[in-house]
Image 1: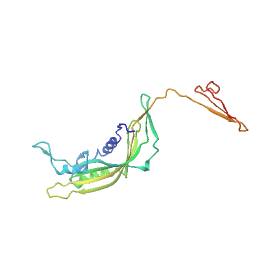
Image 2: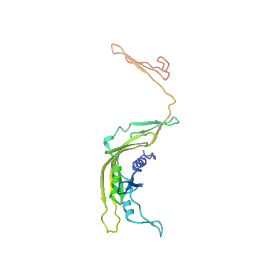
Image 3: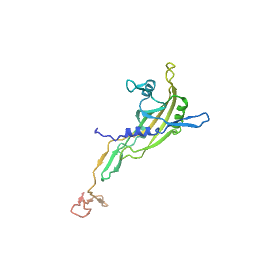
Image 4: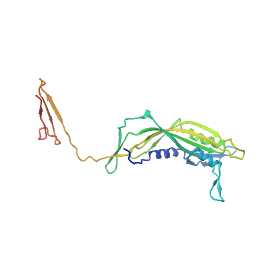
Length: 245
């Protein structure tokens, strides 16, 4: 039953989700409202707690060089997944595709799942954080649909990404010497699928056709049935005749 395969459906889903937030920027303005500079916000995959610890602690590159993480910054992670019975289909339904060599590949019906994702935005000032919130939240009303090519069979599958909640917090615990960090957490639900392994159908090189006919007389006493063979000849040597008395 269990055979190794890897169509990277989950990996492609994570990459597709992260690509949505690759082009988020923050700007700095002067007192007249003129844009002075615009910076792209880095995006990294990882848990929220990991980012907070890296912000609070200085990293050590060597014995003499110590660096500090720059803000603003964004991170995201896949939190979990749950089976979605509302989108269930017949298990024996198949989807087929033809390869260049003429081979037909297919897989059985996909399994619907609800994926939970978290997106985090970290900044020093509330102004930068609100800029990120505006750019992210304005794209979801409350969902955004992306097409994904999961494998050679299931291509251009529309995957809805739904923004369910947004929360802004500020780390206030600790001394006055601690760095100020404002964190915004976005929660998403992704309606996606998990696909099974691809199976190969042999190339059809020969076909055989059979035809059956029958008749019943008025007295319902006798019935005749005949069949043709692969030649399609009704009266050929491969035909059969039966009589019920």
